[in-house]
Length: 441
Image (tube, rainbow, N blue to C red):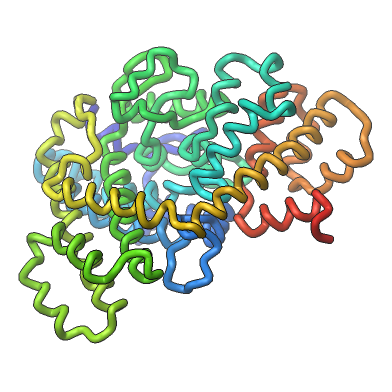
């Protein structure tokens, strides 16, 4: 792979382009298109770790995405500066700010496909098709590859679908779409090697396979097999930004909520802080515990960014050759300290009572919604008459209702229904479930 193609400013259905605005590059336009989009705005009421937070300092998917984007921009610029020095010819077309903008935009979008109730929501949607009679009724009506999509809901693939849906008009550059795709392979992939980082999950549904192939061809991503590719190199920076933020900031939130003691959190942060260790003396000048934790968090993130960007640059040739098989955070010098934080998070944070309670609710709410609206979709495409499902159809967004009416394909119909349910915010999913089940009017 080579950087010139990997930084493609082409958009689907358009020729390669450059920005017509001197003050705003095409990659910065990507960022702006995402942040003003409807799917991004809904992240303000989607679970990060602590669902439906009553505390104003606990992170939602929205604040998490903004923070990941900020870290991603810094990682991209640090890496871009050195890459441009190593490849002088690139400087005629690109700047370090282009690298930063691509990673920032892809990072901003990285959680767009997540359903209500976080990872529990993903499992609830998958289990519906695996075990619920209405979901199982589609098994004989779709292809094997399509069934793999339905029985393995993947937020990354749903995010790629959202970014390429015409209704949102995003039309992002191929560079940003490539950097966004952590797993450049489909769900139905019998030769999958889960030991390979880029094949651990999947990054696009059958419905977007042609679009991703177009992106991969323009970027000249290394091909593994048909429809399976190596990662875009900048994806490693997007992944690192996410890993840094969720591990460090989840700990900050847990300390704020009293799930982890201050002294324990302080020790965990200090185990990461090496380059900035001399600044720890300033802690004594800070009065509030919240202020101290915020200061430690900032130092830890700064050191992790240094470690991950250095590791990326040291591994550049291996990454370009498609032979790098690790998350940067898993190889950086602070990897053991990060693992200690993650171990604590699993024990004290992710299994906290309030987290488990809302996850359990997700396993009731999402299958309940899917049962009603998928049955409605089946009634529409099979021309079955039902007053109940005619009414439920009116509760679907107009574009989804019209799209379902225009197809006779069960997989396509199911994708539209899943688009609707997975796109709901946590609160609206609960509210709608209560209303259609007769628990609230």
